[in-house]
Length: 368
Image 1 (cartoon, one colour):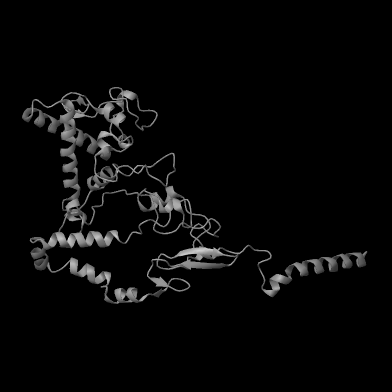
Image 2 (cartoon, helix red, strand yellow):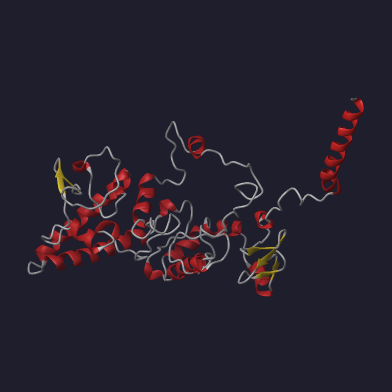
């Protein structure tokens, strides 16, 4: 009996030892799959990582200004540019000091030239055409020809990486609700150090919703690629059918309702457009607006109401000045006026959003 147990143990040891031999020799590939080297993000300066074989990779350094295995060696012009380029700390110091100098700049034509240069330089930081989108971790025609603003500057994490962040961090991301409560939840009011408030955030969100609109059919990574400009489509609707449902077809005005003596957007029973509301909200309480999600947030609904009142106010003025104009001409002219107002409000100097920067300027279309 003892001999049988000893023989079985020796047989097991031989089999187990043969299985461990590659491990003892340092060859782990027979048991562990090779980690995608692109998970380590070896390519620098926006180089594109391409996996080669099981353990190799190549960096596509095209149009990066760098070359080498990891796109780390600068080309001649890149080397000169980096040598002459001031540091971010120097930029910040100049832009936040020497008020007497910036007062001179702001009062001359040089201000517009400077703003044009700033806008152009900042715009050139974004790759155009875009390199990636959220569906692919490699270059593709869909990313190249994507007219959506929902593009990517950094490549997405490859699907076969050990952790959600590539090779760093934990294997499971923390709960989003926990992060929101830990970092964003406030129990007392805290003033913004730059002097802005939630009105500014809602204004920016309301403004951008006229061209940022997710395309549900294509996926959350794509927009409908609307006008890509200021057309107030979030007030008048992004198509002719929705526009007609919102119009009063009298004196060029949009439909409205009066509540406690104040003008508000009509309900969806009066303007039957598609709106996104919680299921418990009755139809007569749902406000109809040009953008279907504006009823979900009070700030967006507030700005939609202000623009509705402004449109109808402009129509009253045009009607008095041009009594022979038709409803269509009044509406179209009022829309052009409001588009100009929207561009003016968006492009005007916003010192509260710039913090302590001394130079002033606008981002209007005339700058470009």
